[in-house]
Length: 243
Length: 214
Image (tube, rainbow over all chains, first blue to last red):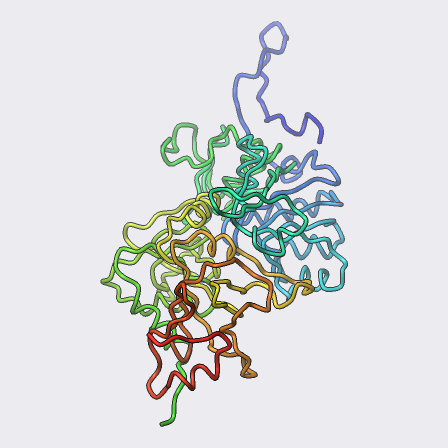
């Protein structure tokens, strides 16, 4: 990823004598899908928010399909139902690896996996969330009892802690996070609707470039501070995609 | 006397009867999800869903569906008064961190050492569906399993040792089947209840693990 891709959009004002002054306003809104997708490189790891259809940034995934990046690693709760945007990315041959907690046998990801045509890493769902949290929080590894007694621990480092067998897990960072919010302001502060948080706030923390689509736009100061779930410091770009 | 094994709702109702007021409970996908339907509305049991819902309520009326509110089976639900939302990392902190009084899961097999197998039928099976089961199984204060007593072919699913890949070791506390309720104790499975007409001998014939009378 280029350094440019991480910069927020800034309004540059020009003084009367023609010299550009420092950006005076943080404005993370982008105004086209192409701008939202700028700089996503081939080979990127994409953290994809959502659970079922809820909180899933489908428009951004469609934008990623248009943008053209390939050889992607996709991190999502599941391998996607047929008809989903993940299925479309898979069918276009743009995904090198899928990291998820399950794939449905009756889906393209399941069929590709059965044929050995897709690399899939299955991770317990809570471990997946915590590995992304760790990536965002600067935790370089953690031990968890989840999966320690199972096939998933084969060949991996375990340790008995407090009488329980635990498995060493590493952070799961992303190059890019694609997330969906309910409301956003120009600082990138985000709120979510009902159960639509799911993976979105954790992924926002875990990626170098976090791109949010929002259903609603709020003026700066309009979102009550205590209702902001993802502070804008974790968000790089926001695209308004009305419901 | 003829015996009539319980159907899915019968098993769910049997389990629901034993969930006391005040517990925080996660219900797994399949028959366990039905358990909530049999907990009376005036009994304040708080249901947790892995996708970050604390206080899952009953299904909405068809004209009152909130498209942003689903449970872990991606089914539309309601939120009970007093309910709240968290993100996925906090939701699994609830599961892993011992905050659930109870988790109810389905299973392929359980064993007398408390092992549960519910995510893969063989080590070689390419399509695996772990989901959140491993986090829930190791984290909840107690794990109950609801499942058919035998396979469709009549093979036992209550085992001395699981033959399928494990989800977690030594965590099962109780099993509700279509024939009986079994408690897991330090000595093995103790029969806590049986459907009308069932005898300990007939139940043992359908069970690989040794059963102790309650």
